[in-house]
Image (tube, rainbow, N blue to C red; front, side):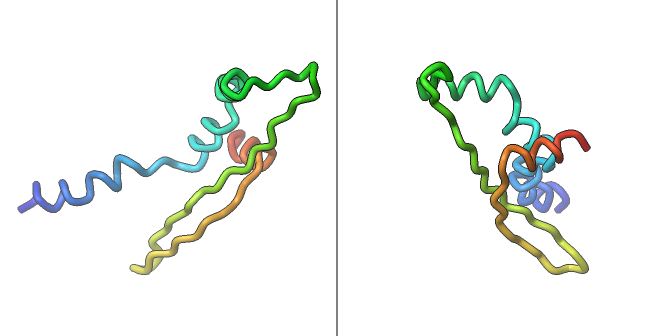
Length: 83
C-alpha cells in the first residue's frame, strides 16, 4: 500500500531542515535579541554570549547512510547563510 509506506517516512521528511535554513535561524538578529532578553545580557556590563551549535548531518550515498555531528560557531553559520 502506497499510503502506509508514505506515512512511515512522513516524520523524517517533516523534520529535515536544510543547513542554509538552520544557519539562518540560528544566527538571526531576532533570535539573538530574544536570547539577550531571556538570559538578561547587558552589553554595558560587558556581558557576552558565546554560541556553540551542534548539528547532526545525515546523507545517503550509494545506499549507505552517513551520519555525523559537527560543532559550528556563529561565524561559520553566517558564511553558510549567505550561500
